[in-house]
Length: 123
Image (tube, rainbow, N blue to C red; front, side, top):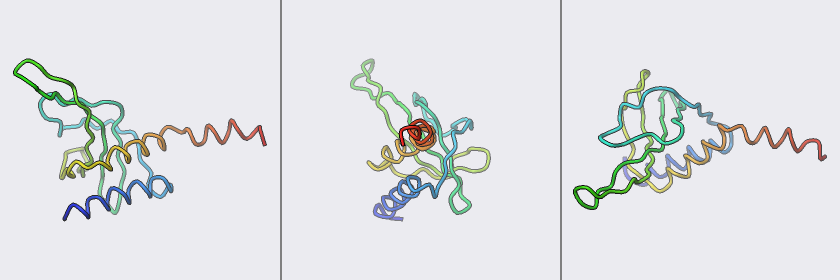
């Protein structure tokens, strides 16, 4: 699979999430693919697409400038997992993954239904 296909894949996930064609769930699987100082930030999300389980999460990791000098850097990971949460394949990092994460976070928050309910009295 080439880089262009990865970008198309993530873009399609984002579009279909916005269109409510793909539904994501907050998940409690432990994330076994974290390495070293990587730590989960916020929620972990999963969805099923064409009999594959996809996991999306935001994490932080140490970025060292010197032996004892580092900053925490935020990153995102999109990966295929098996039925018990083991990582099967991790997609390469791409600028479109944070956009997908924000779309998923918004869609799973229930904000749309809140606004529909709350603002329906104004009509």
